[in-house]
Image (cartoon, rainbow, N blue to C red; front, side, top):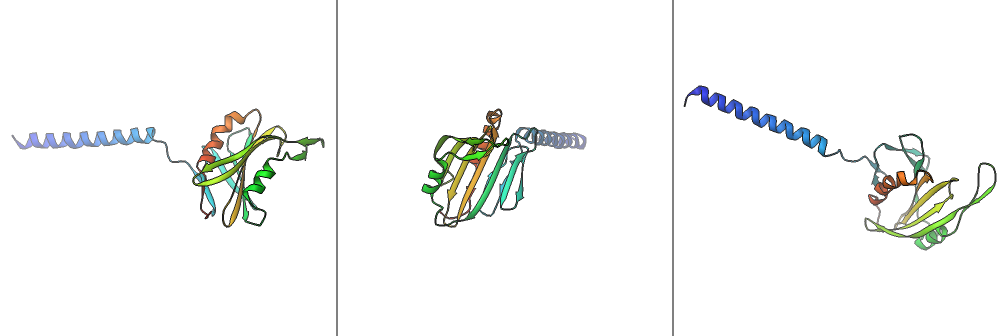
Length: 183
């Protein structure tokens, strides 16, 4: 076999390997989505759904969908644990309907849909679902946890007409909650 054969053979082999590598890279790029954005604080973190961003506003962090209309919001807050910050106190608080005033000044009493506990990444979170507890015509899901040093409260609110649309986005955030504090 002559030099021309070996040169052609090696050139074809290298080009074939390069094309297969490029094709594999393209398939992987389109088949495997990029990892989700993460919200990370000094106490906890979670995955953000696509098109959601968070902004710190004073002692709270507000997360919203970048898409319109703005029919859902997540509010996160944390404080150092005090003597009244217990799972029992949070359960009692979430079991009680809240009273607030609507924009027209009339009294609105929230409907407690459910209260319970949920295990998330080794922590027992107190959960509650209310209708009209924070904003008229919005459902609000509450999650609270108490660690050895801090108490964390997260609310997920969505308008009654779009709650189903946002349910999976909220579940993404809730199921990926990871606390960095000791129990």
